[in-house]
Length: 438
Image (cartoon, rainbow, N blue to C red; front, side, top):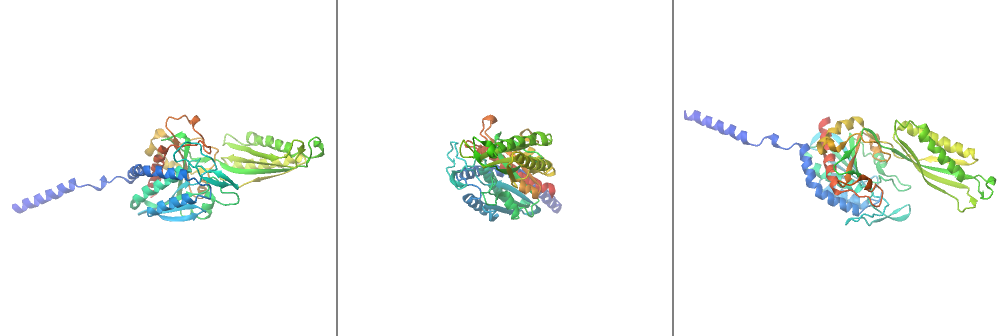
């Protein structure tokens, strides 16, 4: 009887202890854990952002920024590649479980703009642009992109053993365009093989006219292809009082401008997508009474549809050539390679929609924003692998968007408060994508 009772007591004790001991289910899910870690690293991210902003550098000259990033990644035990596409940095975090290779991208460069915002960490840096000394400012928010991705690297490194697959942190130089005569940006990163082995890539852009806490994106084309053009018109110089003795390239230039504006309005199916053809500079002549021999013009083309882009190019060449010939002048049109359309893979975009809703709430997500005619060289990555690019709110809550300074201006400003959502979203996109495809 005593033996039976002892066995009963031992059994009761065993089952009682197991019933009150912590279960494996009590451990937070990885998707929740990264959100909590994002909150923990937010103060650091803000400090990093201030340092990067104060030490702004131009395209292909991001030397201090690259060293700052590399030191941080190394401190986390992440494998680091430096000098990628000139000044770029790539960090490689191999998770503890098998899975896809996921790219996350942040651009690093500032702009030749003099800061006018009264901040204790305002930039007073100087650089060289087109051979001239210029002030340098992060007038497009790339400082926040870098700081956010540094924060994501810290978050994911802390849960490395639970990460499915590999994460590549791509810190890209020269998004604003490499200096004249140099290669750079995403195109050079692709050329050097950064996307090889990657399954997908995610990128964000903070927006000064979208309120903190809001996110916008869309499937398919989200930002336009961009192409710069140059037109050289050669006439015959003569006295301004006797124009019939020469060939006037100024009049020819004016007619080309007017005729070219009919391309978008009369030759393109604008219900399909928007397009823009803008002349930004006209140069020619030395004084009022001389008809010059040459006039040069430059401008930009923005398109959101590949077929429309080709139609625009073809019509533009025809108009330039025929208009010049009708005036007895000669004209050459050069169009650069430019950036392709920033194109969000529809399947990937649909797959990751729930992540945005879960992290910041359905009421804060616009998943079908209008496409914009700004351009982004993130598009070069998307030509190689499926990618998703989205906009993150950076405008202080309650501010009128019409009064918020636009990007690339001296008064450009984004609130530090906008970066927490960026850390959360980029971290969760990694975790959620890996779970969905594994």
